[in-house]
Image 1: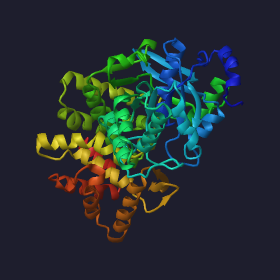
Image 2: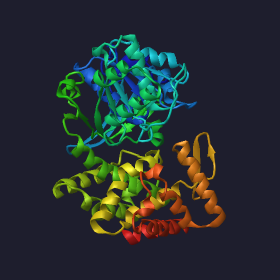
Image 3: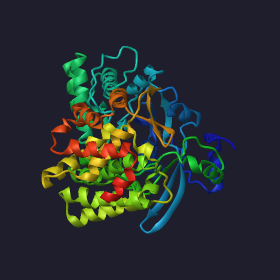
Length: 505
């Protein structure tokens, strides 16, 4: 079977099993740092829809964010920027099962091999937007020397270098600033990215005129994204390829629901009028309620579920929700520990929680727990820890289910080696990858080696909870938390996580 490329588009259109819109011819208006499943099934899909609707005229340059030998960009290049999005699930009471070819991506760049090509994008007068998703671990300050012909590892350093190059190429023209739309799930993501870029500019001793242009001509906007994107449907790939009539190494599955909330001046919406294409994109002057609801309920539920369910033997969100014990634990965590802490109308929070569970149970979506587990240590203090601490503040006691989730996270990161940038865990005699930063993996290698020597789960918990760089504070200072987590971890290591979940459910 032939691989998807542009020479096949006319035949695919004629076949009628896959939606193929008109091929875009507009200039490259968007630079995207991040080539993963989420952005391709969210932002790129939206831009493709807007192009087809005639409300936008632009294409996307995709940039590989991390220095890995086998990046998605090389595969994207081999398919001439094309890939298929499978939208599957229920929407407004109707069953949706649709395949669409996204054509909005013009090309990909690996900046670690072609740094000059990345910087050359700054000279494009049509470039207006910079979109990113490097996960919560990406929007962090890391002291980085001024790039000298080589790509920095840091995402904000890449952005600073790009903006500096654009300022130089256009002599600081105020109309050549960019609209930056980071999609990383951290609070005030645009503000945070701007502040880190300013730190890099100061570190590098950059001209005050450039710094003024960076803050005055560019718009670092805060955003909130919401769509469940499990990624490449490996278990259905052959059947989906047969349905479409071609092979696609980058096919991606997602649910119909989508929301992109952007906090910024209303005038900017006219430059990216995605809502006019029928997309659920909201421009607002206050992002907080959108973020609060989504992060605390949907992402918080994911964070509580992933390590516990995985260690209990589940592989996907759907399996977990349908499991009598794991599903009961999840529903009890939402009902008894997460929802009561939220400063929201009770009807609204109950409705959103019910919708979240329905989305998790989507039979078409195989959302792998290990996929969600990427960079879990950076995700926990954003997605679940604030709720845990609020519960303690309100109730004066420890939420036992969330404590179990934290213990399960520590257990899931049990590794004594790092190979090819990944830790190696073992579940049921089978290895699994632990995908996190080098700093995080090195820490867990150390504490688990000590545990293997002394068998002291309490000491391991004390060392992990004390790690301010992970959690933003010493969690041993939360009354009762260390004892609860240590007790739960001891039970997990004894192999009784399902018993603990059942007792708590």
